[in-house]
Image 1 (cartoon, rainbow, N blue to C red):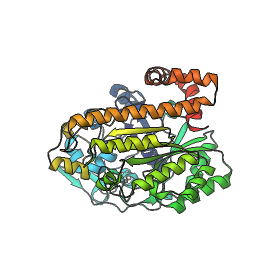
Image 2: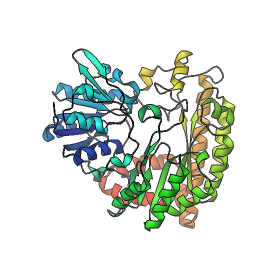
Image 3: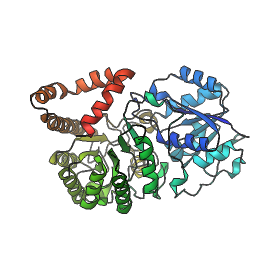
Length: 477
C-alpha cells in the first residue's frame, strides 16, 4: 500500500481565526515534498465549511487525507474524519490528541491510521508502503482489532527536518505579519497540569543555532521582520539561547522577535541582554501561581523569588513582558489567587492572562480530580470546547469551592484589564495629546473586540494593511 498524493486538513476551531499557519503540519508537508510526495493543505480555521473542504479535497484527489486533532474541539475533528470516511477517503489522524489518548482515538472516530508523538518519519514510511507492523509510532486497524506499534526513538538532531516554507498553505490568508518558529521540542519538567510531555515528549531536542538562523534569513529575505518563537521551553539551555542570539547579531539582520517558553529560572542578565540585542522584544513567562505553596503543589520546579526577579529584570531591560497564570490549581485558595494578581500588578508588564485551570486527560491534575470525584463539568463535556477563558470552573476542591472560584476568576479578569489599560496608556503617552485621545477610545474592550477583531480583521484587504501597523505598535517600539 503506497500513497502518492496527500491532503492535510486542519479542522476549524470555535471562535478562532489563525494568526499563522500550523507549524506541525508545515513540517510534515515539507518533509513529504523533500521526498517527492505531492501534498496540499486546507486549513478550515480560515473559514471553510465541511462541504467546502470536501470540494477542495475532491479537486486535489488525494489517496490519503491527514487530519490534525486536538483534544479540545475533538468532536469537530472527529466530524471531519467521519465525513471523509463517508466519502471513501483513507484517513490518517495525528496531532496532540492522538499522542495523549493513542488507541482511544481510533475507537472514537473512523480514521484508518493514527500516529503518536513525532509523525514525520511514520507518515513518510506509510506513504512509501512500509509494512504497517514495522512503522513505529503508528496505530492502525487490523480487521476488528486496533494495533498500537512501539514508540520510535525521538529524533535529537532536528536539523534533519527541513523547516516549513508553507508552499502548500493558503499563506496570504493568515492575518498576522509575523512568522512562527519552532526551534526545539519537548520539556523535561513535570508540571501537574501540563500535557506537553504526552504531545511532544519529555526529552528536550533542539535545532542548531545555524539552522534557526537559516530559517530566519529565509523569511527575512522574503520581507518578514517579525518572528514568534513558540517553543515549549526555549530557554532550557542558556548556552544555546546565547548562541542563537549571537548568530542573529553577527548576521546583521534587523528583526523583532516575540518568544514564548521562557522559564524564569533559566534566564539571567547576560542571557536577557543578548536576547535584547538580537531583537527579542516580547517575552512571556508561565508563572501559573503567586507563591511558593502553589509552585510546590503544581511541581513547577522554580521558586516565586526566581520568577519575581526575572520579571523585574526583564522589564528593566525594556522587554514587553506577558505573564500567564492559572486559577484553581491543587491546594489553591482565594488568598493564593490574590498573590497571583498582586504579582501581575507589581511590574510594568504589557499583559497577563489568568486561565481557568482545566484538567487535561493524562495529566496528574486530571488523575487527582478524577480520583477525588471533584468534577463539576464532566470531561466528555468540557473537552468539546476550550473553557480556559470562561468564568465557570470545571472542578472544585474543599479549600476552593465553585463560587469562590467564580469570584476569583472575575477578580483576575479585572486585574488583566487594568494591566492592559496601563500598558496601552504607556504606549500612547508617546503620542502626546493624540495619544491621550486614542487611549480614551481604545481602553474599552468592546472597541478592540467588535470593531478591530470582528469587523476590520475579517477583511482580507484591511487585515493586510492594519495587521502590520498593530504589530508595529505593540511589538516594536
